[in-house]
Amino acid sequence: MANKIDSNVTGLRYAEETSLKTLPGSPVWFPLEPNKYNDFGGKLSTVTRKPISQSRQLQKGTVTDLDASGGFEQDLTQNNTYRLLQGFFFADARELVQTHKLNVASVPTTAVSATLYTCALGASASATGGDIVFAEGFGVAGNNGIHVSTAAAAGTITAPGLATEASPPTTASLTIVGKQFPSADITVVMVAGLPRLTSATVNFTTIWGGLLIPGMWVFVGGDTVATQLTGGLTGFARINAVAATYLEFDKTDWTAIADAGTAKTIQVFFGNTVKNESTAALIKRRTYQLERQLGNDADGIMSEYLVGSVANDFTINVKQADKVTIDMNFVAVDNEQRTGLQAPKTGGTRPAIVTKPAFNTSSDFSRIKLALVDITTPVPTPLFAFATDMNIKIANNVSPNKAIGTLGAFDTTAGTFEVTGKLTAYFSSISAVAAVRNSSDVTLDMAIVKSNAGFVLDLPLLTLGDGSLKVEMDKPIDLPVDLSASASKYDHTFLIAVFPYLPTIAG
Image (cartoon, rainbow, N blue to C red; front, side):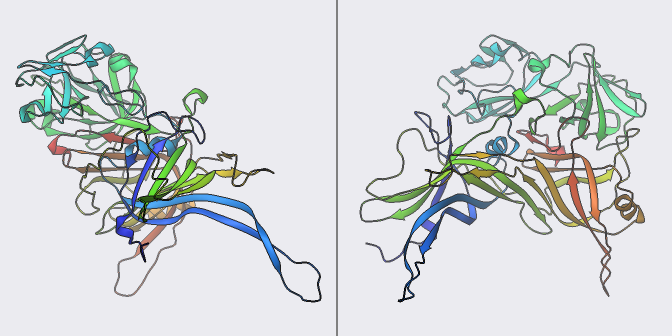
């Protein structure tokens, strides 16, 4: 028997249950990258017997309860958090058209010719000519990256510049990440101070199966002048309204102006969207089993499990000159341990970790803006220029349900969905303090971009608290504020857009 087990031999994975405490017949154990753990496991409660006795001694008691929970911190990368966001938002992601989705079986790409990807993607009644297709994982380098489709039919996507690949890897994926509009098709008109991106060829209410809704984020413009608005105006924008002939934006990176779109083939990029939903049919509780392997005993790998785990707290930590980190905490109904002889749970698959670079807080933030809600302009004056640290926390307020005859919990109950946070900024204007005092409607969003991919985090409606200026000798004045988010006009409190691909100019 080993004298000790080092932490470096441990590993963390999770699998989604089909129902509370029940795994599917062939679970997928997705890997995680924890930096540290927070009280991972089961905490047992005992009651000692205290009979009245001349010996005045306690008598051995008994185990009466089990509280199972666990949490961990990991760096934020493009691929290690997205799937679990569904659990914390109690909702399915609103996904782009793609061959590898989160909640349905993957669709293989069976072949590539000089002009065709062969797959079932085109049968989805959404892939069309002009779609910007992002390809990953193909064996031939030229078949990866961005390709603009010229046509799509059931089972194929036509795109120029491909190379013959008879048997692509099963992990190769295709995602429609945007649209390149025909020359001079896109025009920009201003209505009540807000820009509308209008098209004569695309119906925005039905494109890609009706994916687009108010509150979603897009990136307008590609890497060439011909794919950008007049004057090279590019950037992130939030959809305020969707109509058959236009998208209206109420937040933009640029000062919008009318644009006739002459000789322009404008590109617009879209992301997968995860948000808390307000419609009962779209609210979905997920339960997981978290597996932590604990090294080897004399017989094999030891392990422990949090069973029937529900996503509870999710915190995004942003500090100056650091990495962006995520704290995730779960409430479970039971905790299991397995010896090396019992071995970790079998069946299913255990994909390897696909390592991606961490997002940093120095060069990967292309946008961070706290401003008063202003329905007359998409570029309101920010309440600060620079921030020093920030965190945003989702709390599902999950509590275990206990009962006689059950050690641990038989189920859990989710409480109110709360989003709070703290932000410290360099003081530059009294308007920020006034926004706290006046209980003004405030909005916060930020964009994080690295290696042609990234995230947008959006809190459409906030109330600010604290606001007490911190004045110290020989230092700039700090303004700490508390963030309390509420349901917005879009019927959500918090939205995260995950962009599989962004043009280089986005960074």
